[in-house]
Each structure stands twice: as structure tokens, then as C-alpha cells.
Length: 231
Image (cartoon, rainbow, N blue to C red; front, side, top):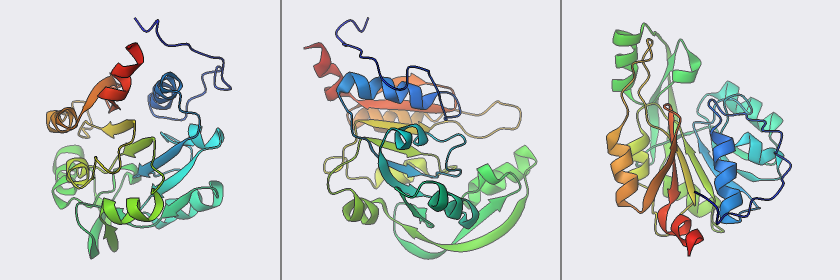
């Protein structure tokens, strides 16, 4: 099916993955196919520097980027273990604001700026709100204009309910990464989460196609870039 791709041997042939469900390996396949060898990424909701990270593989391959992590514990760990990256201890949303409530959940991978999502996880998933912190939140443009004037290849987005709001604030004409990896399923303790058709529709309308879906995350590639490979 992909006989037009001339796959070459890379240092990742051992198939090491740091992502939750192998997303980084799928993204690496796309990068190889598109001829991308220098990696720039924007990792929103980074959490841990290595564990379940969609960008750490590319860091090990010499890449660099900006990571957004509102939890100060994880942000400090990222800054220590990934010194080539810039980690901002803030949130990301459609508009820049100050003193925005950040809901720290009993499962720290589920922390969110969305009050609605926090309350849903309490009522439906047995979670608890451990703490509410008040943090600065930036709009995408302020980060992109300051740090990605030379472009980027990958956006990884995992923000527990604010994905669509953030995507709508992206200037996808000026900043157009080849690949997006977006969490598209709501958290449910029994695994019965709901996929977001709205995110898929938004990305499709903006010229991206679904390349892969790992149930938790959907990987999108710029349609025109991908289809040009077969020409």
C-alpha cells in the first residue's frame, strides 16, 4: 500500500516506544515517509519527561521543542531531565488569562483546567479533586510566535477536555505542523470513554486526515503533504 515510501534503516529499528500506545513509532513512520529528519515539537500536557510521552523519542534523536506542563512537580522534572527543551509551567487555552483554576485530581494524569471535566470525573469515575491551584494560561499564539518562528513538525495535545478550544485558537495557516497527535477519548474508569467526533471533524475541515487511531489518541497528518508522496 505504501510502496512509494523508500524506508531507510534508522536508529529506532529496535522499536523502542515511550508513548502510551506506540504513538511515537507511528509518528516516526510518518516523519521518515515525509523526509523529516530534524524534529521540532510542541507538547501540550506533557506530564512526565519520558513515561507515556509522545515526544521523548524525538528528544533522544536530537529534537527539541516546547513542553507545556501546569503541574510544578512534573514541570521541574522535565526541566531537569530534558534540558534541551523549554518547559513552561503554565496552561494553554483559547485565550491568555491569569489566575485560572487548575483542578488537581487524585490521579495526577487527569488534572485539568476544565471545571466541567473535573466534576464529570468526580461523579462518573470515582476521582477526587485533591487541590485547586490558580495558574497563568497562555493562548497558542503567544507560545508559537515566541518559540516556533522556524516552524514545527509535531503537536501533541492532551489537556483533558480543552483540546477543541485550543485547536480552534491555532493559526493553521501560519503554523502548520505535519503531524498532530491528539487525545480524542474521554476518560472513563471502565474503559467506555467516548470518542470526540468534533475534533476529527475540525481537523478534517482544516486539511488534516486521520492516519492512525490508538483508541486513546488520534494521529493526523497534513493531507496535502501526505498525498504528495504518491505523485
